Image (tube, one colour):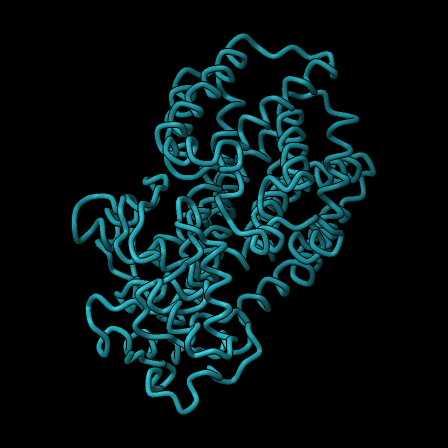
Length: 486
């Protein structure tokens, strides 16, 4: 009966999580960000052409693109390119994290109440909501797979689960470069195990070596051209310096509080301390290694701040279970019958105030692509030639090629992109410059036929119009666009 109740509560948490996410995601037809439309284009092309898009004729006017294909293949197979189903499947994928966190925390503590609360906490992490809700992002598949691989690593003695570990590792390798985090975690794990006077089993050592070799091989196959082009600098994906500074920022306490949540941060930090000092368990060492690995990557700016904080947030939710388990054990010893139930009620109240309400507020205030911008993309699609080249800002490039179905000058996918730094500088001149002759020279350089001046671009460059276009016969304004006639 207890087991049935436990699974029932877990099912309720899962359904509540999915309902919450679908409520906000399906409330709008558009996704929240321009980056979502990079993934949408890959999915739609697989459905339409029945193969992976390796050369994108619309991105940067035409260029080679590389990416792990599993996420896009899975969405294409399950949704048939239908936007509604793409949204639903994306939210289902990230919601499975609840089940995986439950399995991990049950392994760490053996306590159902603590595990269920950590699962609930993991579903309403502000940073996770902010970066995955109504977003078409590969993290919706990569994050559940990453934590599933870590969980299965603890179960290698079971031959069936060993096979599942290897399959999950393959799937993660074909999904996202997140798989490299696993290598760092394993290195920290064996280091901590030695310091803790515990011996890793033979199968753990063999699995770790096999994992490292396997990940390196698959990643080399996928990113071979980029490896030869950039070397170790592939980590920063050929991003311009100003983009790097913005994405790979230093970690600050404010960032931790806003993304993790003060409640999860406090209980998780205590749980990590208690786990390392009091519990000599392999599972504790593995997830302590995970936390150290993420902090290491953030400290040396080897992952973006937003992504690092999301993963770190899930880690804190997991370690929260150790704190709660210790408190429940203390209450058992105290033999005060009502204490455990009262503590559970207090926990739920604190969860509502410090996790659910911040997550709800973020979800409610989250802005999707505006109706005006979607109309502008339709204008491009129906009022420009098929071979037109449209200039927009860097966060509009994927919209232009996916919804407008036209060539862009730049977008946010920098890997193997031609001269992104030079393009950013030239685009700034086209939006802020005063010389019509210089502007015409740059439009000919990139074959630009139309310049898109959105409200976001005006704000980014602090302009109201293109100065050199006033009274010009070469730059004719139509709606939010300047059509080039010379």
